[in-house]
Amino acid sequence: MPREANFRVCEGQLLGARQVPSPNYNQRPEQTEIQLLVVHNISLPPSQFGGGYIEQFFQNQLDWSVHPYFQTIEGMQVSAHLLILRSGEVLQFVNFNDRAWHAGRSSYLGKKECNDYSIGIELEGSDDLAFTADQYQALTEVTACLQEAYPKLQQHLAGHSDIAPGRKTDPGPFFDWALFRKQLHHFKNK
Ligand SMILES: [Zn+2]
Image (cartoon, rainbow, N blue to C red; front, side, top):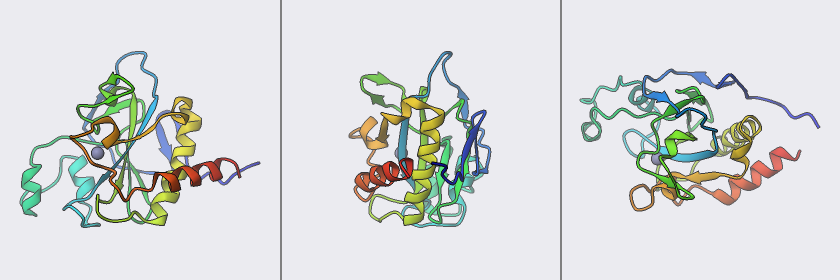
């Protein structure tokens, strides 16, 4: 059954996503297969949405003087492959073939350094607010697309808190894994 394809992976790029290149990446170790999808949340300032600060942060262009919180993250160089805004718009910062800097110290099924072999997706959100229906829809479509391009992802979806327990709490209690998995199953089988 053909399904509407809003997204497609071509040479590590997600067609259908707005390309916002970040300098914060390096090479994955040689012969590394992409085998884990990590879901995060981020908002700048915390629990405030819009403003474009996340994009600026991932591009090392954030003006640290704009908000007191920004001073607490001053100089940090991080990124994720994708960011899904509250509207459901998808932005790509790092090519999937490259290693984005989203997971930090982390371990999945005994394998350390998740950045080496994972794709990181940030949802614009926080640990204390629900995500939008548009975000679940975009995450569902993007995940289905990525699972087709990188089959190992079919079995390996995790939250940042799962791979860095005690250190990270995102995507947080408001991220509805059951809903996400249900929508994903439904989308892939329609
Ligand atoms: Zn995170």
